[in-house]
Length: 347
Image (cartoon, rainbow, N blue to C red; front, side):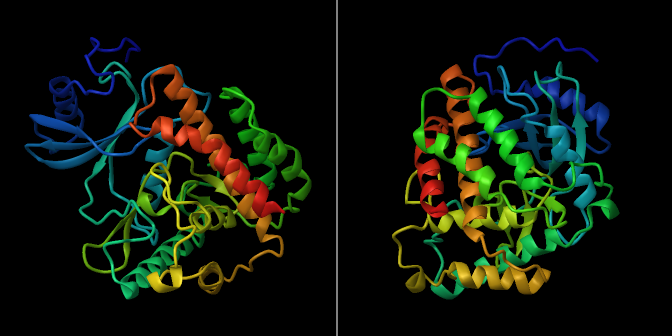
């Protein structure tokens, strides 16, 4: 095992296909090369590739190149979650191999099965009829509830995060991450950093495996049925309060239409057949038996703040020239908007 990277490619995100095929043939039973690697759209944080090989189709996720924030881009944590959840009620792709040797492709990576399903990048679901949209949103809440009813200890994840005081700990963590990637003053972020700790609820003892980035484009759906067949992109997962995922998902109802993080604000969601927030919360509460707190606006504002801090990290990486998506600069520009939405919903 060595930290020496392979010879530099012209594209920092290009994979050394021959060397990767040789490695996987030696390490993964049944794998046969040669292979070709095609980077997927998105993947602003951990670059993700379709791997077409003689033995089949796979998906590879790797750490990005460049200087990285501490504790970020932990693909080994993602792999551990997939191992814990595969075959259970929360659908995930089958994990195949984790490589911690950076010399193979220049970064830690893992390989998983390719899941053949539908991906929706726009939460307005323009290609579906109203009835189909409502059914798909019901399926999303069903998948989230299934995830949150799993006992982390029962699947070997009791030590996957610190239990208790999730919101307070996350506020501290993302404030630090935001300050570490700050590129200029954003008054709305300063306002949230000042206001949110005072609104932070007392810990109610709820602990679940939370995804951390639970939005429609991180879900894969059955080709025909309105059913989630794989939840992807587990980089931000941890033990935490399950309502954090619900609040994060509900941000889309307030986000404006934009190319980086398309939302639903300003659309006639009733005509579209998309359930309103009250219906989404009621379905989740009915499936999990978990009540929605009186200070739901705190959960939403926390979600906007956290996503704004993440977007600022994308902006910083873009400034340094090592962001992994063409949309990185656009996403970074969302920081101020997200922070202002958080201020607005907090009241």
